[in-house]
Image (tube, rainbow, N blue to C red; front, side, top):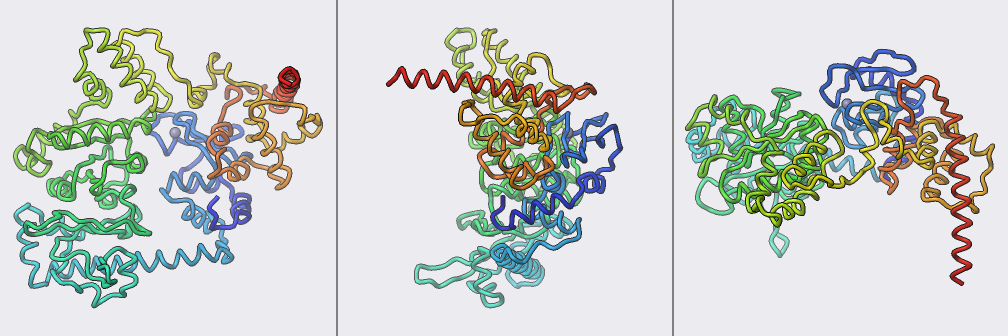
Length: 558
Ligand SMILES: [Zn+2]
C-alpha cells in the first residue's frame, strides 16, 4: 500500500490488466495446460520453469521462487519502484493514475524539477571543463590518470569552478538547495557546495542524474566530496557507474564492485566496462540486490590493505542474505599498495582480467577468513568456528548453496549432527514437494495457502459455518482477516488479494503461502475444493480441542 495512490485504483488496475498479456509483452509465453510458460527472466535456465497463471493473475518460478502479481512483475523485471510500476501498468491498460492523489502529484512535481536542475548543472559542469579558465588543472589531472576524452564523455565528467556562486548566480536557489548543490552558513547564507573540483555526475538506473561526487585538484580536504542525501539521492541505494555499465551491456556476465570513482574510470579506460563503485559508504544489501537484478555474479574488488580487507569482509557478510541459488559472489583482494588503476597499468588488461576470473569463491574466502585466527586442531577452535560461522550461514536463503555451506561447516568442525535452522523457504522445493517437506504442510497452512490461491474457496467456509469464537489456533487472526477481505471486496484473484497485504506485517507470510505448492504440480487429480475442505475440517477439529484445553486450563488457574 503506497498511501499515495488510492488503494481502490490499484485494485481496479489489477482487475483490468491481464497478467498473461502483460508478461507476454516482455517475455514471450507459451501455453501449457492451464498456464503459460517461459524461461525465467529472473534466473538463468535451460528449460522453462517460469509459469503465469491467468486465473490467479499470478506468476511463479519453480526454479528461483520469484513470484507475484502484475505490479511485482514490473517492479522486478523493469527495475521500477512501486509507484513507477503502477504508472507503467496504468499506461499498459490505457488509463491515467487518478488526480485525486493530490499529495502524490505534488511530490512528483518536485522530483521532476529536481532531476531537471541536476541535469542542467551537469551540463554546466561539462561546459566548464571544456572552457573555464581554471579547468586546466582538471584536464591535467585527467591526462595524468590516463583518462581519455571518450571516457570523460561517457561519464559526463565536469568541472566546478572555484567560485562561491557559480551555480547560485545562474540557477534557482531553492531548487539548488533541495538538490543538495548548496551549503548554508548558520546565518542562512548559501553558497556552492562544490568548488574547484573535478565533477562526477551520479546517475540512477533510469539515467537521471541524482547527485554528484567531486574530487579536489590540490591537497585540500576532503579529497572526495559527495552530494548529501536528498529526496532523489540516497547513497545506500545508488552505485557509481551502473547506468553507464548498463548502457554498454544490459545483462553483464559479472559486475565488479570497486572502491572509488577513479577505479571505475581507470578500468573503463582499459575496456573493462563492468565495474561500479559504492559512493563513500559500505556496500549495502540494497546495493547488492540492485546489482543482482542485472547479473548473477558479483566480484568484490578491494585493496589489500587492512581497510580493504575489513571492507571486503563486511561486504561478504552483507551479501549472505542475497545469495539465492544461481547467484554467486567472489572476492578479489589486490596486492598491498595497489588499486585497480595502478595494478592494471602495471600488469596490463589480460593479467588483470586473469585476476578477476581467478577471484576467490565466497565459500572459500568465508571459511578462510573465520578460521584465520582459530586453531582447528583443537576442540576449542572448532567450537569457536561453529559459534562464528553458523549465524552467518543461517542468513543464506534456503537452497543448495546453504546446504553445502553447512556441509563444509560440519566437515571443518567435526560436528556431524548440526541442526540446521528451518526457514519457510526450505518448504518450497524445486520439483513439487519432497515427502519430508510435506510434513510442514499443516492444515492451517494448507487452508490459508489454498484460500489465497483460489479466493472463491471462501464459499466452502460459509457452508461449514465454523463457530470461530470457540476455536483457537495460531493463524486464526490472519485467516479471518483474509476471509473478511475476500467477502468485503468480492476478490476473485490471488493478485488482488495479495496486494491487500503489501507493506503490512503479514506481507511475507501471505506471499510465501500464495506461492506454496500444496500439491505436486504433476498431480492432475488434485481437487482443490476437497483438499481445502478436508484441511479446514481438521483446523476446526484441532481448534475446538485447543479451545477446550484452554478453557480447562483457565478454570484450573482460577
Ligand atoms: Zn526463476
